[in-house]
Every structure is written in C-alpha cells, then in structure tokens.
Length: 287
Ligand SMILES: NC(=O)c1ccc[n+]([C@@H]2O[C@H](COP(=O)([O-])OP(=O)(O)OC[C@H]3O[C@@H](n4cnc5c(N)ncnc54)[C@H](OP(=O)(O)O)[C@@H]3O)[C@@H](O)[C@H]2O)c1
Image 1 (tube, rainbow, N blue to C red):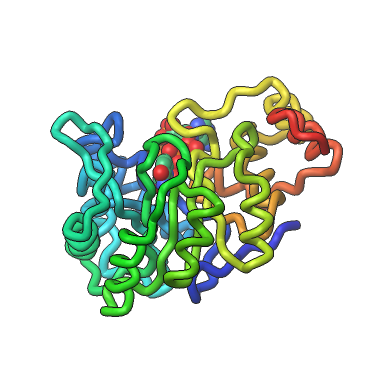
Image 2 (image 1 turned 120 degrees about the vertical axis):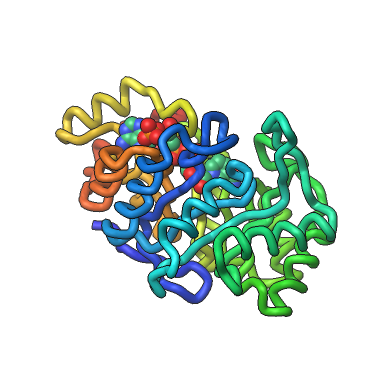
C-alpha cells in the first residue's frame, strides 16, 4: 500500500487532492452550468477528507476562486489551497501569458481577494513560453517577482507549472520550490526523469491532466487491467500515479460528486506487478 500523505511546503497533505478547474463553465470560461452542483462538489471534497485543492484565478476567470471562497470559507485550518499565476484570459477565453511584474503582482492580489485570504499558501508560476507544453526560456524575472512577494509575506511557498528540468534548476537558485505541476499520466510520460529527481530532492510533483484532461484516457489495456481487478479505469489510472512515486500528489478534476467518490477509491487500490507491467506498455515504456 502506498503512503497516504506527502509534504507540500511545510504541510503534510493527503496525496489524493482535488483540482477545481472543472467547476468553471465550458472551456473553463464563465460560470458553471449548475452552480449548486459545483458547490455540492466542493462541500463533498472537504467532507471526504481532502485537504489540498488546486485552483487559479484564471479559471473562469475568477469563477472557481470565488466559488471556493463562497462555499468553503472560513476555511478549515488543515486545507491547503494552491493557486497559479502567469496567464490571463481574453474576452473570448483565450489563454495568454501574463508575466510582467505588474501582471504578477495584480494576479497575486486578485487571488488573495477572490479566495478571501491574507496569505496564499502555495503559488505556482505557470510558464507560457508554449501554452500546451514545457518550453525553454528564462523564468528568472517572473520568479524573482514572486520570491519578493513571498518575502513580503503574501505567499508562503512557491511552485512551478509547465516547466522543464532546466527551469526548475534556475528557479531553485532564486527561491525554494515546493512543487512542480506538469502534465503527466499513464499515456504522457515526458517527465519520468524529472519526477525521480524531484522525489530524490523531496519536492512534490503534481500531475495535471492525471486522467487525461478534457477527454479522459481511453485505452483497451487500461480497461482490461481495470476489469481484471474489478475496478474502474479512472481509479486504476490514479492508483498507478500513486504507486509511480511517493512525491506525486493527485488533483483529479471533476464536476461530479459520483466521480469524486470513484476517484477517492484509488487510494485503496493496490496494483499488483503484472498490472503495473501491463500499464507501463500504454506509453511504450519497458517495465
Ligand atoms: N497547471 C496547468 O497548466 C494545469 C492545466 C490543466 C489542469 N490543471 C489542474 O489540474 C487539475 C486536473 O486536471 P483536469 O481536471 O483538467 O483533468 P483530469 O483530472 O485529468 O480529468 C478531468 C476530466 O475527467 C473527468 N472525470 C473525472 N473523474 C472521472 C471518473 N471517475 N470517471 C469518468 N470521468 C471522470 C471529468 O469529467 P466530470 O466533470 O464529468 O467528472 C473531466 O472531464 C485541474 O482541475 C486543474 O486544477 C493545471
């Protein structure tokens, strides 16, 4: 059985957390189709014992943060809210870089206001050299701005998102990095080496799109492994991540209480060696 918790900054959080992005409207733009249902998911997240929620003010924009504040504040003292800055939305919902000093300072203050906090527990700098995948480029300027805001007491811990191993090293020379949030799942394994390096250094790795994202993973191998174990494919996909490395923290997103419950069962599923070997083949990795 995998361990249940890992350190995020100086807090020990449950490895199964929740990603709030799916609570905004279609395309992560505008209000949810059903606000009462979105609030019910958030309440159930807390009632289920989850103590790590991932969000951003650019979801909506502002929508998920305000939903979280209006539904969950005053917050349970055990709850770790992680947000990210570095992007903005235009009037049509497009995702644009927002890396200037002024934009970063404004984004931190917007997150504080919309979450109803005096200090943000963890802020990830979301690199936007390419919106869809890590791409090289210096993060020194924007990360230094966030490090200053941390020194001022507005942020407790810093993280990075959509970054290369070189950018992690660059940032760590400026300020401590508590977590890295990149795309990673059973079928998308670009970060295998980075995960192992971060595990050795005690830094949390938080895969986004752990279930494959907007179009969840579809694989006959995954379906077969799940059927053999009497489990759900999404439960297996999450259990595989939990077994992949001890520093992986999960933030699966869902707008459904039923899916939330299904995803939480991943923590109780132990994948035997033959299942792990079969799952490795989905991304063509030799076990
Ligand atoms: N840093 C970044 O650049 C970045 C980018 C993307 C996401 N994120 C963060 O990562 C979190 C997770 O990513 P994500 O939500 O985009 O993708 P995900 O967790 O891989 O998958 C979410 C999708 O899976 C579906 N789903 C969830 N549980 C399911 C289940 N048990 N059975 C069937 N379908 C299920 C959801 O639909 P339903 O709503 O119908 O359940 C939704 O369509 C986000 O919430 C966000 O906080 C960060």
